[in-house]
Length: 104
Image (tube, rainbow, N blue to C red; front, side, top):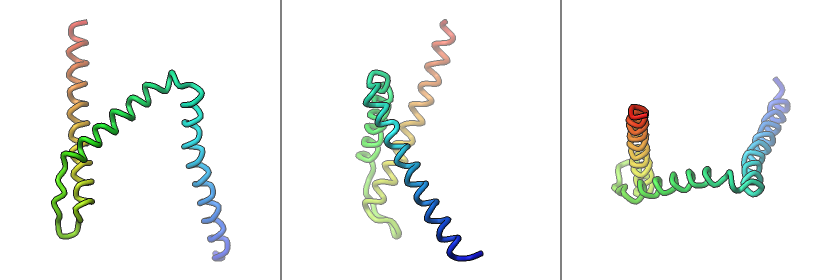
């Protein structure tokens, strides 16, 4: 295949990816501004997720290893801790829902 055709296809793909990214960011932002009352629950979820991620990052150590620096180690540890917190919350929610169904 001709190299020019491949390069043109790659450029068009990058342009379309950029447009899709813009639409994916601008669309919800417009919806947030026009219908804020319904967007509050989504914003609350985002704030809670950010708080869990901040908690995980704060609890993580920045112990260095051979191939990973201190900052990367703290980000990795924070992600692992946040994942464990989310798994625990999911399990607790599942147990709570089942107990609530039992008493209904």
